Image 1 (tube, rainbow, N blue to C red):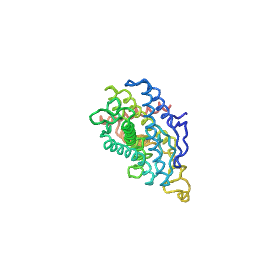
Image 2 (tube, rainbow, N blue to C red):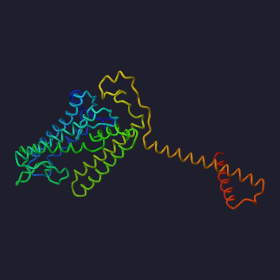
Image 3 (cartoon, one colour):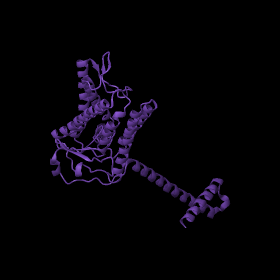
Image 4 (tube, helix red, strand yellow):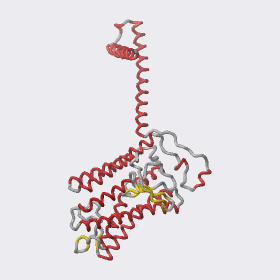
Length: 360
């Protein structure tokens, strides 16, 4: 409970060999939907509003379960070690870590968004062929029943009807797909982006600031979109998008703390690389990554070292020049100095006196 980013009080057992837990944010999200359902400013009785909310929550949880089950199934088929799943409203609330370098990890990551997107496309086709209905493709639409499909010539599908249920199921999968394309943790797109960095010449997330800068840029764009939604009257949508931006920023800071506290293990879980199976245990002992400064701290330290080096070189040159001037005074007297030499003598002598007074 001390760390809300990883607090998952409900355990759902193991799915295809992967431990699945329910994060506190998913519990709060579902509870808030059911509690506020009777007070929604829409037509219908309290019981009908509650019935629609329960149906929506069931469709949402089903879409979420399919998304994460596919992750776990692909990880099992590829014999890829899968970290614990913390279910939250948009998938798995995965924390910062060093991604394995094998291609298996990449396939596991993209399996979830691919499935969610494929389900949305299949639902859109079924709606079109079965009911001549149009899928709700605009995630920022201002409609009252935004996920319900448009029936040709009749407006939105009637609540709790077959096209309404199917349309909302496809729309929820569509939202999960879009959200997990974001190149920032805790989304699948952030995991895939870090895997690409780890397998490219750009460098891993622990050695560069590409991933944190990209995540913060994503958070800034989301914040601006959320603020615009608030200004145009979409209060809940705007707040939700702003909260996503804040969450991304929290994960960026969490990643920075992990690096400052000593970083990650070099090769994955407990120092071993499981991307090529368990035979990697025989290749050698685990290599624990030593403490590494963040990229920002390394940049600041290099700047400080460069300034210190320039100051030392300047002091050496001034001391050499001072010796030459003093030698000239000893040979020819003070009157032989030029105006520039006099100014230099006064300036450097005053600096030396100030330095001695500070040391005393």
